[in-house]
Length: 68
Image (cartoon, rainbow, N blue to C red; front, side, top):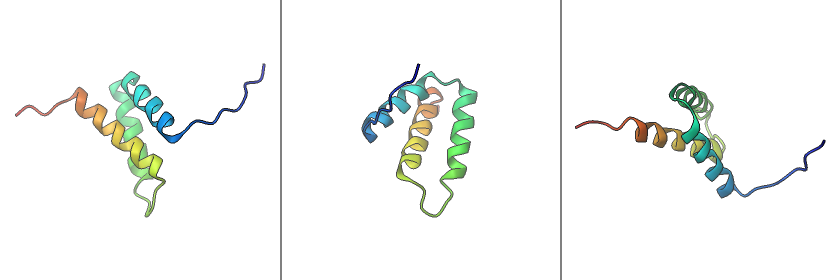
């Protein structure tokens, strides 16, 4: 019925987000990236937002490598 509250370390949270990013469609990846980009335009955004934006950018580049 009720689920317990669980706390996870920042590294666990980042690892889960990285896995979630790999499962996102390209449209979801871009949408999330734009949202986080807008949130990170603040003067001092939370570090977790900056890390998640970096993960989304890495995933996008992995899927769409630049052809030289």
